[in-house]
Length: 631
Image 1 (spheres, rainbow, N blue to C red):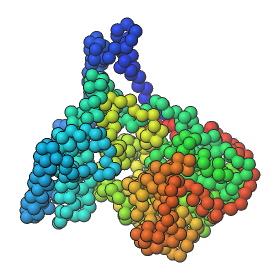
Image 2: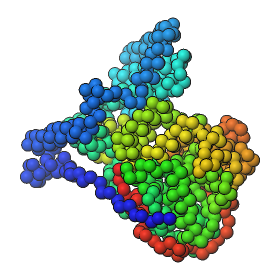
Image 3: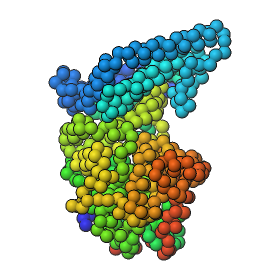
Image 4: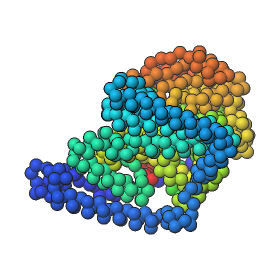
């Protein structure tokens, strides 16, 4: 086992912008700050600064991105993911069935006629029900003006009518390849989200109000935010979801006390200080995803899963993955199992003297854990005695919209993108993909707030973590996409690791599968299929639990918050519908239900262990240096 240390790379320094009011005050010689719009000298200086910055950003972008020049001059395709091919097939299907096209057109005309009639009656003073209303969870049209102002109401209903018609038209198409059809549906939704009237400043009442109140200052601040985000992304727009300067790792996030007790070139192992006099005999080892950083489980004391587990009397270890650079481009999925999973197990034994552990795998960390468990079962390795999975998949047949990004053409495009980046996938690329799954919440809402309203990014720990993306080695990521997503080999019993053909049904330990009701990344139906895989050869110790919310909030839900709900069912019937029909729903966090399960399968107490008590000397304080390496 090696203990090479990776140094944290300092982020590129950016000049901090002064608040607009401070600039005006400075320009006017102090005293009561004047509005930027009221101070011509400050306004001129401000506009000149933005103009110069804009020119610099654009010129640097084309210098650093030769591919952008090729696209702009027609030397390279602007459509590497073959979105155009999906739409060409869609247009071909429409052309092949003119009768259906005409019928759909008549339907649209009918819907608009109904809307016009409704609006006419409203303008005449009648109280009428809208022809169409937003979905209950659609927050874009929450402002009262969308209901009270007749013209805005008409714009809103026109948009909703067209969006509904376009989605249903694409969905009802026959004669298309099913994958291409789903791709067309996905990108149609992206188009629909982009053309929402809320994304146009003159139509958005919140933006109009902000413009009136600030006398247009919001638009100037928004432009400055936009240029800063372009600069931060080296010419590609990198939208800030949170105040990136407010949070500091180890200071106000990832603050649970502990020590790094082991490290190699791809990970550090952190052991946390105990908070009870006695602890469970078996240590708890957590494998977070390497797509993100581990501190999603240790944001702040009030929502830290790691801290809560320590308070429950568990000796907690967590793997903190390196943010890899090109030097690790040839690392493989097998390397992550050996150097990530197996070496972490060795480290826990050295630190505690215990041969057995309870393990947790989150997202792709859970996919790796599933694979490792199948390999360990094949070889009679019994070091992991229970496994819990947070929104993790091993059967990818129903893995949702992410399947749209794993056909041959798109994987080839991703491979070329990684080759151009030195053999790694830039963290921003994967973050953008995840954001597209919920574009209204994770893209357009920030476009409106940051660039139209001119608001400062929020001091929100979860969004700060979401912005702290990591890179991934080429071979690891392509293996994950091809072998799991595209071919689903582990679920089919076709995956070979270390020369062994793997079978999840051979894993015969207690299994707890947590899923999120609204998870877009690991759909709860997909997680249920994974639970059934573990039970396929007679393992009756498999538990499936469905939590409220999605991939993050469904997991990180401290009991003190009293949020959401969870559903439980002791049985594991053939279908998810049968499971839901027999499930009991309970309010609040699922953590207490799970810890009761864990205590039932992991008994025994010992005196509390501290980092350094065993054979491993502490290397540095938690959260360690690997997690601080920025992309």
